[in-house]
Figure 1 (cartoon, one colour):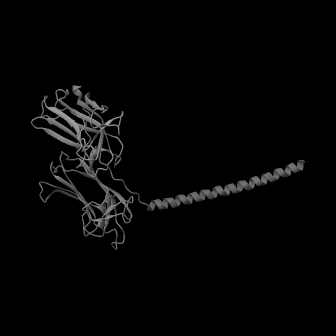
Figure 2 (cartoon, rainbow, N blue to C red):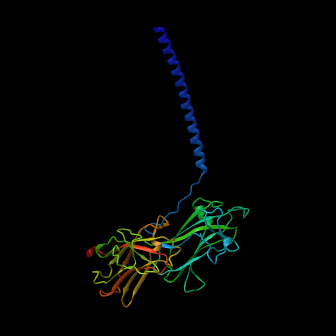
Figure 3 (cartoon, rainbow, N blue to C red):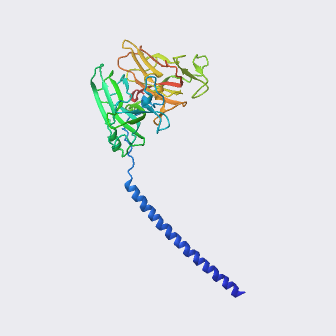
Length: 385
């Protein structure tokens, strides 16, 4: 019996040694393979150039959308041959700019407020099909930003951004692939209220280029409120009163009701009081916050719902600020989602305590916008708190 037990023990030792030897060989091969893989990966990475992100200017904040065109529909006066679907970004239409046409659709609007030194962010998807030219990289596409004054055929500013140079600075190419281009442009001091600002893509030579998702947004300087603090609230309404003619239970940010403004009921219930009645004075800030929701995609800032701010006196201050084009987050418009929006107004020096301030929402369009939880506060200098 002892001999049998000793024999079995020897067999187990031999099996164990064989397994250990095989395991050692496996570990060695795995190590060598890993080194080879790491070496190959290092060689690949040494030849691969990653895209460089575009720097965002500091001390600015999102203001509103100027225009946001996706070319998803051919307009009534558009040329169907210029709206194509083949190899698109998301299987929708894009715009093809040929050298015969040279110019893509342009978007123009009037500067109505002091935007000097603010920033405009312009973004667009761009692609160039190969096969149009012997050298597909030899193209002359440009993003152009210009401004005209008093209807004269002369430029207050004219700035062109060669697309090829934009690609080089971010280590990318666009032949047979779509690339998202981003340009930050600071509005120069030469720009005045009333100037016409214009954006377009110009393609004078070297074959077609394709454009999609062309948008521009306004980014003003961040408001410095370090010397101010909230003093008191003068108005708050979450629109729960069912007697309001444009109250609705279709949507609500809080509670069960909001108000909906459109061509059917153009005005949302607002606020009206004298500066004295608000316990405010020259130099104070009026802070208006509200929540807004929409179903539609806004193409531009021209035909949108507005927040209206007026001071009724001899000067009669009247300003409007878009609501639709501020319903935005992370670079995209929000649809069927509530968005909190903040507006700030500084009471000017040319007022007296008996002048009346009026604040309300207004929408002359048939695209409904829902408003809820409006609140108005007075902010005073810290020394006056």
